[in-house]
Image (cartoon, rainbow, N blue to C red; front, side, top):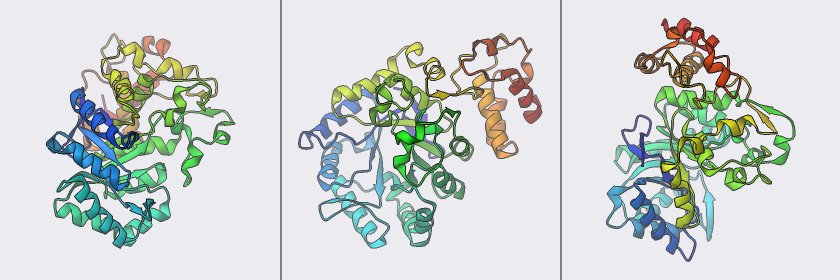
Length: 382
């Protein structure tokens, strides 16, 4: 298992993490089986958005004796009321729900306390104004939440939260099809057939700005819906008109700026191991570039996907890294200190480019790499 820093939190997190889909199956016995398999594989991070008290109790039982082996990302504002799930902004319900959750999980603290499901700017304003964020900060001051997060599907809302400085972790939906869709307050738009009827080209600029802002600010991104609810794995369901593999979906998410881990939901131990196979898969099986370039319904021309098909460079330039830092600087309108220092640490830089063009001949997306190397020199000075 490979591990990555979760933004600036100081946590080192397994890049394959555990989602809670499927944990309640087989009368909740699946929960312990999934945690056993996760521990064996080196998974040390999981998400618990569900508020079902029976599931939370099952997770608490599964963690008994090994709480310190897992980082918990669990959600406040996700409560159980009248026998069903409810997302609430009622502070009294939020407080009561948190106390119940902690008792059921049998823990004194959450590693990441996730403010649950905010997809509207007006809802973010509510979180700021009615005491929800203040309550999360109160819990952090008490040590009951180590880090504050937010879950969202809307890049406008997520960007507002990230740039406010209020959150340290963002749970966001990341996959090649969702990345093409503009912001919406209705999450259903992400997979609606009508959204893919017209030709789509390149990443929605608000999503790119979000990932780059997270990278600059040290906000770690934990990924949900990496497989688009399974649709991306089935050509007959995929909005792209073609299927991707599990490895390709995971690799796409993990190569986005600021992404730390993919939360792999599983309805069986075998499904979890299917995602874990990514860790030992050869690079050619992870490679998503050729598949994306061949999508019948989507085009990515001119947009760097950080796939590294341009390598090897005779001057040992990591074109993907130079381009990523260039994009971060251009989005900021200047060179943030962290970006400058990361660029400096590269073995070779934009100024080392000799303009041979070998990289461009290999790029599946027709990116003007030589032009980007010249821009890097203009921005960074070398």
